Length: 181
Image (tube, rainbow, N blue to C red; front, top):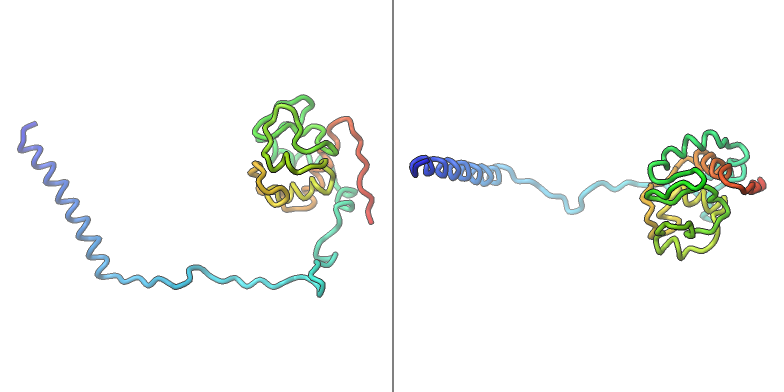
């Protein structure tokens, strides 16, 4: 390639660059955007609580004990498929991104062998009770702030109860269901 060909390529590139800069400047002259002082929309949310600030029983729905007594472990096994990409459920199964959940109910938190739990979960003492599992499954990061679990949570209380019943069916323990009040 001779220098004349190279000069044509460079000239074409500079011409395109000149046209682009010119169009940007021309569009800035022709269009004057107005930027609002406060971006977005304000969404008004009505408070739905009684005079004491506590939700009434009708708004809160049935208790966990009622949901567990009406739940179905077979449905919970189907719900557990959402968890199967990160957890295994068989006895002696491998840890994945999350620990194996076989026999998790009423066992201590953050002690499963060969799994690197977050410091937040390790420092949250106690056992995985029905209530704790329910709160954790509803919002993992809200129940234990700083947990590594990236799951957003199960919003339907019935799905959580079914999953807890499925987890209850795993392992050697036969943990009694909480009594309905």
